[in-house]
Image (cartoon, rainbow, N blue to C red; front, side, top):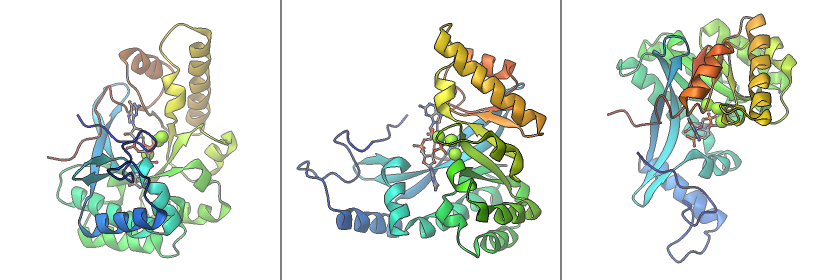
Length: 264
Ligand code: C2E
Ligand code: MG
Ligand code: MG
Ligand code: MG
């Protein structure tokens, strides 16, 4: 087990020994050095079929492994995005994930992609050549995109290109923020990940929890009507797993089935 250190708790990646917060410039150069020193690592968390509970794929989750401890992506992805460093980081993540597939260490991998990466005009071409060079089947790779990025109309042709290539896409964190049910059914995506905030609320017999379950039931029903499989993220208890299976979720992911871990 490992603990991800979070900002604000006094253990941030960017807090100095004396407790002083580091400047934006210092934080940025620390992240630059992390890339150069190879301190970024991919951890992998399994996803299971809800019915059989067999592992069907693994999600790649970025970690910054520092001598002082492991830093989670919420602590450095925002800086990476605002500085543009997310572009080289994202390319490294893709290359690493494809290499894990090429060497047969995993059969199917889901990679988180930020909107900035997808905005690069050569994104799909780059991905296509990476897969070709490595002789990895496009169907072994999924891209997870958050709804806010998927709602930019300019991404529709990109999603279409990915679909033609055979790389599948999932809408991550569905239901968080300004979700539109219509975006679910109008976009060329292949999977819906239901946000952990709904799953957290499921499992005990209180009115709030009943409501959370009904919301999930509704999302699953709509997705299913349009032929879209669903995955529930953040499943932590057997009760949640059983209720989610009962309402028809296709897949389940969460600490109950496995935490993100480095490949041995
Ligand atoms: P996400 O894609 O929605 O990933 C799910 C997050 O929930 C992960 O946090 C995972 O460790 C955590 N999680 C999984 N199961 C459980 C559970 O049962 N209970 C609880 N409490 N949490 C669970 P993590 O690894 O800190 O990642 C946070 C976010 O950072 C991700 O959210 C994703 O949006 C982003 N991210 C991670 N890796 C990358 C990457 O390589 N590139 C980009 N652009 N973003 C990334
Ligand atoms: Mg994800
Ligand atoms: Mg998610
Ligand atoms: Mg999430």
